[in-house]
Image (cartoon, rainbow, N blue to C red):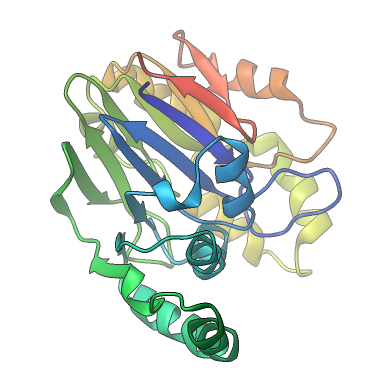
Amino acid sequence: MNSVTLLGTKGGPAIRPGTRMPTSILLQMDGMTILVDAGLGATRALCDAGVALTELDAIVITHLHSDHYLELGPLMHTAWTAGLARTVPLYGPSGLARYWHGFLNAMSFDVDLRLRDEGRPPLEPLLDVHLLEEGETRLGDLKMSAIRNEHPPIEDSFALRFEGTDKIVVLSGDTAPIPEMAPFALGADLLVHEAMLPAGIDALCARVGNGDDRLRIHLERSHTPAAEAGRIASEAGVKRLALNHLVPCDDPDFTETHWQEETAKTWAGPLFIGTDGMKIPLD
């Protein structure tokens, strides 16, 4: 069955008791099992979604903020100990190869020990790192297209479009509203767009800020208000919209109703307010 599962839906890297987990998305489409982003908790979330770690066909990292790739190394190591013995292609920005080699170096005692003591295959070759750039890539029977979005100060940050036999899924990545997104998402069966609730930013900055306005400036220039995500979905004529990477998502003063009301200003179609483990069928 074709589906998208929002494994982790929290915007930002910090977690606290009772909060959601950072970003990761599972795409199951045309026989391919693809993980997009690997924030903290991605490994457990995949298993909770019923996907064996050895079943991954590809991993894509949209940008190098920690809440999108912190668990990439541990995920691959855990898949290896679970029996992974084939190469998994990884697509992501420049810097991921350095991360992977750094992880392997940090874990060299354990990895070398398991090679000798348990007879496992070498771990390093199991991840085949490819540079993610604007353009098209084939992932099995899927066509993956990438465009740069706007997520300053990071320049290599991407939105993704997956086209299968008869379904299209678009993932915005972390981004401010950009005019290119609506044509990029044109006619998609599902648009998963990051979203920010402007009314919740004051409380968020007061709770986790550093005493000045740098966090607020980052949020306001690098993320998309929910109403803008709705506008983009309407302009693109997508069939369904899911809000993901929610900022804020753990403030009891702001509930799902607030997200629905804000998005309804510009979007009248089917709406999913992302929660961890939410599976959205495409069929």
